[in-house]
Length: 471
Ligand SMILES: Cc1cc2nc3c(=O)[nH]c(=O)nc-3n(C[C@H](O)[C@H](O)[C@H](O)COP(=O)(O)OP(=O)(O)OC[C@H]3O[C@@H](n4cnc5c(N)ncnc54)[C@H](O)[C@@H]3O)c2cc1C
Image (cartoon, rainbow, N blue to C red; front, top):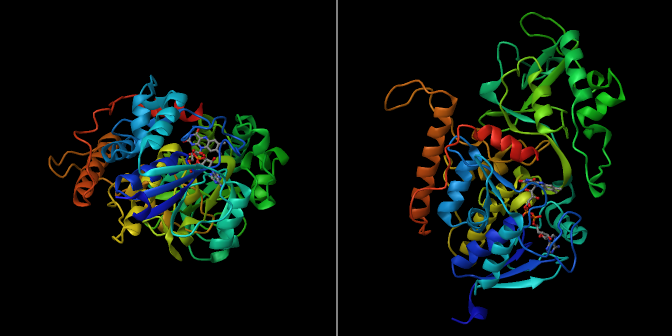
């Protein structure tokens, strides 16, 4: 068939999300115009003209069956996702993590895109949103002119420019004998509150003051709004600054004892199921190891599982819960799909996975077929449900984590045996992967043969992840 007569879509940006989007759409037989502005115009972080270039770490995260990124990798592997396939071919040893030779990976993705007869590559910056069915995948460093075009389409208030994110912790890991529910000045008890004595505060202050900080690239140096100051910067300004700011205890007392405190940290619910809670006002760029120590020094968080660390780097992203369907289409503009960081995800792998779904859905729309959403037990299904259904106030980008999928039961339903944390995660992994395979088959999407053989059941996966994530 003549390519000109076929249903057509446009993908803007050939990074992690755009490359997977273009190839997923092409696989459904749709003609794809893929626009990438590099090398004609580059970003402050990219250094080559290749697609899917990793701008910082070379890791796609841990791949064991107790790791949430491991499940997302397996899902993408089964679906034939371009980034994960290229990563598998460009592996370097990294314990339990999928780390790659970044040049080999980017070259493999670029060659695969160029070799696809359904994809036409245009090396050009787009400054307006094209007509027809489009996937927007221009990433955290979207060019200014295109960011203006997006803002014009979605509304001024919905496009964020900096990601000053606070850590998010798993609900099950919060000590409820310490954290108490209350609202300030007797308002609705929507928050969990962590009470700090002077001794607790002194310890916290000391840790923050000595913690190692992320040093931003010059171009990344942020002009902080007063209301969006990282906690370490507040602490640098003086001993009392955090407790006169986000840690202020005024208007709060313990609902049962009436006790008041030297300082308080509030936790805000992040998702509808209350599986994830963020530390209010705790945006931070502390190195992850030190960040974990600071968070775990807070009363009630001594065993906290951090599902998303705080980060400070330049990002361009939409307020997804206000704008997006779980299909990744804009609610108000059903021909426009959004993927990657722009859609409110964080991470190479998450960007690639949302790219794959946005590309597939854009193609389905162009073909006049219904768009699809993966089941809730899958990591991608959990992620896109979060993006469209999270708390929109102070929305922050999200990465793959176990809080996104339904929790495992405490006991194995078959054996009745009590399951520890690892067993429960492995259970969620198996449920998610089975649901994913069934969903691909039902949607007529040819899953790759076999089980995710590349899974390494590394006992040390968490340590390897951490090393990969902080390098
Ligand atoms: C400084 C920095 C460091 C990061 N470090 C990590 C990390 O270590 N690990 C991790 O998992 N994630 C990291 N991220 C977050 C994020 O996961 C990656 O940036 C990821 O590459 C995002 O994928 P994407 O497809 O959304 O964007 P990108 O991969 O950046 O792709 C977007 C593409 O769109 C192109 N483009 C932009 N505007 C236009 C336009 N107008 N017309 C045509 N093309 C355009 C760009 O040139 C680019 O190729 C980092 C982000 C930043 C900003």
